[in-house]
Image 1 (cartoon, rainbow, N blue to C red):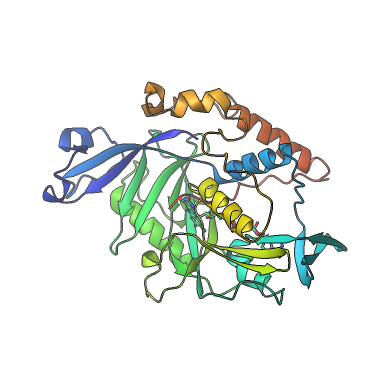
Image 2: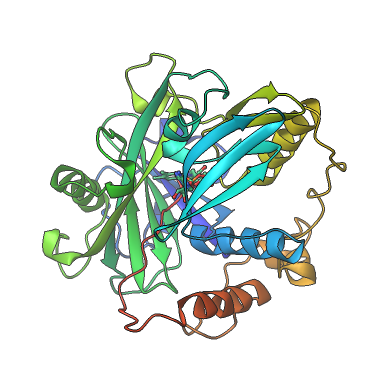
Length: 354
Ligand SMILES: Cc1cc2nc3c(=O)[nH]c(=O)nc-3n(C[C@H](O)[C@H](O)[C@H](O)COP(=O)(O)OP(=O)(O)OC[C@H]3O[C@@H](n4cnc5c(N)ncnc54)[C@H](O)[C@@H]3O)c2cc1C
């Protein structure tokens, strides 16, 4: 989780009269930036997480604490029992039944479909599926550690983030309604053009404006946001919600939306809901416990009083300086993939924050 210097632009000096605003001499130090109409930049620091590695850290933690992690199994049917549920899993074509008193449906954009499998599930709520797309460009010269937030013509913010050891730049995201299968979502040609346009409005790399030929890969993610009727996706709340229903001495809890940044706090709310439904639960414990593999390293590095927390990490080679989490995650990924016959290498698909 590197600490990133963030830069936000101001087109008018009056809009930028606040703490942290840098004036023109500092703008000159940002070599790729277009200078026209630029009055000031805001410079601040924030953290960046690799979402795939964060998920791995959570899974490894859960496994170390006794959870069964069943990857690549789909829930295909849910039948209510007197005190809980019988769940049918598809394990690469083979069916397996698991009985459980409680179900937590955290299927993201697929949440409504999983709820619909059971006659005893929380009542459906209006949801809107919103696709966020990203394009990935090669990092132009000179390589920069800064992340940028760009204001588009509407009220959307677009991030330009260094990615994968500063070898690439992620430019994203868009917000478009997703009508099809969320599992097949992809960045459309229109979204790619929109992101390139936003990028070229702010940046003028020596190699000229970025074009479709410069897009190394693109990807999209879909989230289910609670639909409270606003037409603009950017105005829909990102605040997660949950609902539960009892079934005998068991129950069913469904999660709507979520944020990676608040996943632990939200998980504790889910446990509260399960406790209310009659599950035996210990108390909350995650607040002061580092992520799996983090330990003292993350305490020292991210403590607000630590000077290191405010320093961008120096450039490093792709495999050097891995934190214990990263090292263990890599080991985990290797063991997951070791029975594949042809390890086809493709650029990693991941999501950027927004
Ligand atoms: C474009 C985009 C940008 C985002 N940016 C940020 C950000 O900057 N910061 C932030 O904090 N959050 C961000 N989020 C939100 C964050 O990604 C989500 O909150 C988070 O992924 C939710 O995790 P989840 O595990 O609940 O759901 P998901 O990550 O959606 O995972 C749901 C899982 O359920 C599985 N599933 C579905 N159906 C079944 C079934 N029948 N059986 C078994 N499994 C099933 C799916 O395969 C999937 O793996 C972003 C999301 C998107 C889409």
